[in-house]
Length: 63
Image 1: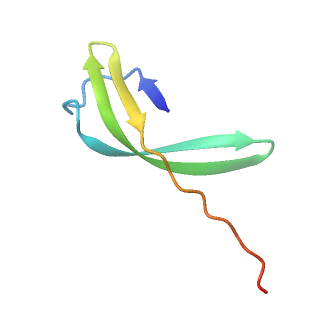
Image 2: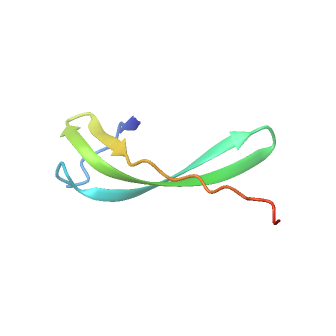
């Protein structure tokens, strides 16, 4: 999974690991999401980031 951000130059070369934080509104609730990503490519319009897979935690009922 990836994302392209239209931004001015950050001075980050491809291959740099970054932490992305973004807000998502679902109904009346705003949730912050944090993802680790790698700068995949940079051009004059912005930068493409490849997000790393994130393990989902599961709540297991106690026995």
